[in-house]
Image (tube, rainbow, N blue to C red; front, side, top):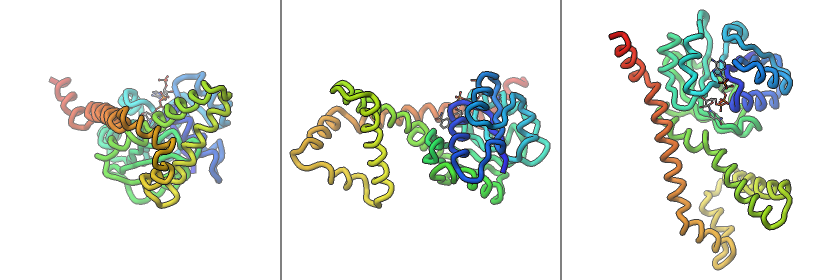
Length: 279
Ligand SMILES: NC(=O)c1ccc[n+]([C@@H]2O[C@H](COP(=O)([O-])OP(=O)(O)OC[C@H]3O[C@@H](n4cnc5c(N)ncnc54)[C@H](OP(=O)(O)O)[C@@H]3O)[C@@H](O)[C@H]2O)c1
């Protein structure tokens, strides 16, 4: 299978890294398109993949295109795509509905997926939804690609913004927690390397238990928290400091932003704007 990725930034690179770690993928199966020459040459050096800065090359190279540009750049990108043959378009842009692409590109198969950066190590969460013109065979192709990169979960498109705030942005929250824990160890005199290993392995092991043991996180937490012990003392401080409240406010804010991006790019908004412009 060959794929083209348009946008060689953080997520585009994570997808390449994740795919190349799996069996059956060669660097020459992937074509990356980005506008910045410096980015293209560094991706070529790092991954030995094919590169281009011409959009039309991506359409000629493969029948699957992953659009990995920022939401604000999607409109400009779609206006440059001249699709003559049936291709599968996979968009990863936060908040951009499948209808937005269908309106721009015609009756083409579109899958909107919200991956996270952990696809780079094959441990991503990829929530997705299919557009109106997607056949089961398109979805099968999509799954054969993304199942290599972590957990793939299908859902109603209206849920994707909600998921974006947790799984799409989530790695940043967890990296921040790792940073805080590691810095505390460093302040106590441990080296950065040792401190980061301890903090990240703690998160990794906890996540693995929560995912694999079939036991709910609450009961796992209770097992670690002996009454009157050190963990309980720390948890009390976290709860008193408003841990749940701060997370819920943060997620609400991310969801609001996803809704704003989505609204800005909804078919209704686009049509309304076009009517306004033509008057
Ligand atoms: N980062 C994440 O963890 C994450 C997670 C889930 C979903 N996403 C989604 O993934 C998309 C990309 O995010 P990112 O963080 O990877 O952004 P990024 O680092 O800014 O990468 C986007 C890349 O696309 C390039 N680009 C813009 N317009 C282009 C065009 N017409 N043709 C070719 N390349 C073009 C940009 O070049 P310039 O820099 O020169 O503009 C940039 O190199 C976003 O829509 C985001 O919502 C990201």
